[in-house]
Amino acid sequence: MKVVNNAIEACKDISSGSTIMLGGFGLCGIPENCIDALKNSGINNLTCISNNAGVDDFGIGMLLHQKQVKKMISSYVGENKEFERQMLSGELEVDLLPQGTLAEKIRCGGAGIPAFYTPAGIGTEVAQGKEIRNFNGKDYLMELALTADFSLIKAWKGDTEGNLIFRGTAQNFNPMMAKAGKIVIAEVEELVEAGHLDPIAIHVPGIYIHRIFQGTNYEKRIEKRTIHVPTIIEKHAASSGLGLSKEQIAQRIAQELKNGDYVNLGIGIPTLVSNYIPEDTKVTLQAENGLLGIGPFPFEYAVDPDLINASKQTITMEDGASLFDSAESFAMIRGGHVDVTVLGAMEVSENGDIANWKIPGKMIKGMGGAMDLVASAKNIIVAMQHVSKDGHSKLMTNCDLPITGIRCVKKIVTELGFFEIHPDGGFILKERAPGVSVDQIKAATIGKLIINGEIPEMKF
Picture 1: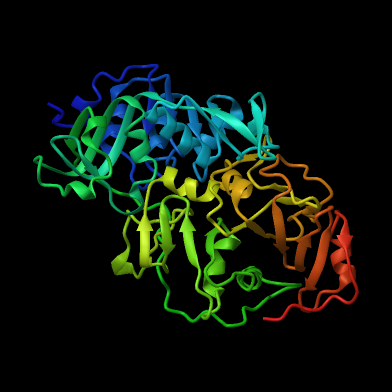
Picture 2: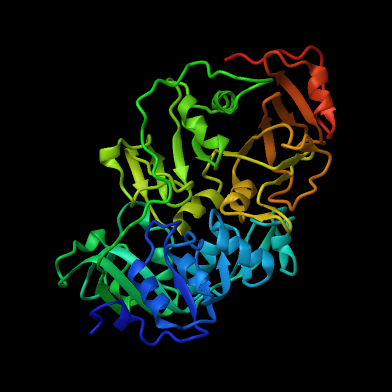
């Protein structure tokens, strides 16, 4: 019998030193009951494989707080300060991987495929010590598959045979992890008898599941509760200082989108781009955590903890939207099916290199999906401030910070202007922000600046 009474019974043979996969993206779709059972079990020295580690006081963050985790294999640190503190202090061993690589390593582990090649991470520290092969003129890293002693996953519905159905973006890493553990434990919100689930609706067949139970007392905490505020987005966003506001940067980037584009928007200024997409331009927004067709933020009454974007914000879905797991999402990205990616950056070089995931010794957020995106998307547009808070230019000859991707950025919009990367290197100044002179842009740019004739002001 696969059915057990509760998380304590399901997890009773997980011992210190085990390697465990835990499903979820942020706090969406995490196995709350199983994590509580681990927290109260007293076991330690765990290796945890998860996209991220929750927050300080919820999810895997609770296990980190109690020093039960020896090693994290993850993609994104995010806002978990304890995770970042333990990593920077050397208390916690951490392997940070591109999010799509992590998803595919898990998928391959469950499919019996020992290794695969990916373009994500080429030219970065992720590639150090790994085999590189060239296929059709492009370099790829060899990555090894991942498996675990136990996989702890969370589904919406399940039956006594172990068949599972997920809801919203709570699929994320759960379906792949359900196939990559020697023992797979599924907790579900609703457990029914075999025959009560429509076979065509099942996401994970019961063959993969060893133990299943109906969970209790789900908090389903929302990391970034974001609601629709019924205010009018100004057609012309305003700036309060020299050059463009963040909203104006987003507005200018929106002009680069074309009818029919599939677009991935990163964290920060890029999320604002959706507010300024022209009414006559139909684009489809993709969330790397498993949604194609992101809609507006919800009204308060429609907030759903099982529906978030890659920034962990609550969202709605457009008509015609589709939902899928993280491996499927990054197959879209890696396969070149996403037309435009808009990302923030700490630095961009004149060759189009981008750095946006850590400041050694000071700040490590993780690369998340950025390395996969910059390795595969057709058009990378960067939204960023031209200079740092301490006055240093971010448009550089070469990036000083660890690279996210090489020769990938095509266009940049800062508060001072709109730039394109020259194929042979250099920032081509195409437009300047209203009220900003060419001399001001020269003074704020370290990298090679290319100026051809009179440079027009941006028009909105």
